[in-house]
Image 1 (cartoon, rainbow, N blue to C red):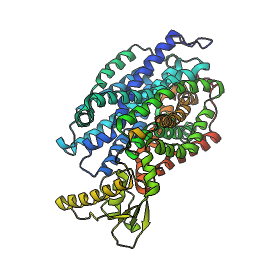
Image 2: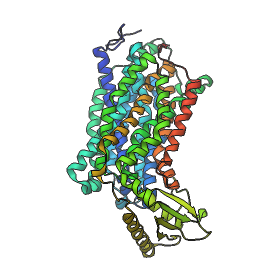
Image 3: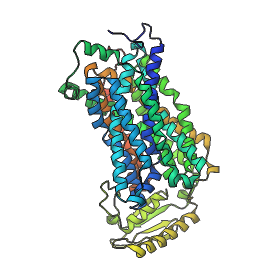
Image 4: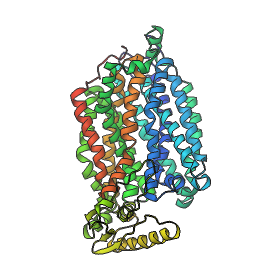
Length: 553
């Protein structure tokens, strides 16, 4: 096999060449994840800036769906850039992906909002999100494959786990930049225009990333394969041949789908839950998540190292099992320790929507063509926005819905056919009466920061991220070892990005819609739990262990 400065040493020591490969690949990928996750971290502000033409509940769902749009196209990016990487090389492919990612992110920072250019604003925003998703689809597989093909066989889990830290470090970096801007500018200025600064700053990170990646040489395994004429002329076609397609499907349902929902639930949904459901101050929520990430990130390396000793699969499956078993108590604990007033008010003055069940809709409309105007929908949407748990009690057909906060009734209204001043008057009357009832019953507009049990909240968030490190730390080595060199980039990228792009990327929007429909703050957790259990069963029964395989084949 041809050698480079980073070729494997017989004993698996971390040479200077290895350090350069790991550092260059990881740092560039951190910057790409930073770019990608800025949007998710600022979803609430972006909803106000670009989706202000719809009601707040629909606007938040649209903002989350625009975030998910970037995930939807990731498999297409994986197919295109994966084939490119298997044909022309790993290095040049992920140079292209980082350029697309960086430029798209910068353009979000200069994009006029809905108030300035109307519907063109959200349309352009979604186009930029799609470009980011395509680039991300080609990024991860290239970086993971590149590092793995440089790594000694007995250290592949450890070396690739450095790549696995990049997603969390990118999120961590985005949170720190957002927090710094918010604290220096103040909340009002930040939400008005300061939110653009983190996007604009990405142009500097892009320059650094491109410079770093230009210093890299091509993967030794890829060079050897090309020299021997064993490369694939059509990697995508070869990847979906019968035997390999079956393996890719097993990897999707038995590994990456569960890994994805655990990852996004433990980091993004946890942040969303603190801010939108528990009404924790955004700055405090960022600090809590940042503390959990800082404490848990070393465990990516630990579980990568451990997978070299005991195997990849059992660690990933254990993470899915722990998540499925403990999500409900952990999120109930977050409510108890982060906003106990909600728990207390719900116990002493429960919210009940008394309505004709036929008028209560599942308020999830990705196309934006439906209007939810019944008195039941008006009432449930208002409670969901307020972060108030509720139950629905059947009423006589055709009756106008009422919200009972303890023993205090508040009559809703039917918004069908209302517009202009009449609609605003009804909204103001109902909103004011509901808010007064909630305040009198002890439901807080915002979580009282003084009452947040910081150590316990951080501990619970840390546990969520520990599950992330278990499923994510070993996954890169596991995927690389399952597929041959000639189609590795394509074959590992497709199930990874379908799992993370579709199963994981849609988690916030799906879970929020489930909560809004049920009135149960924890109902959205059923989605990640069911997917994690599916992965646990399929992965345990049908996927093999890979830690000792020869990846030069």
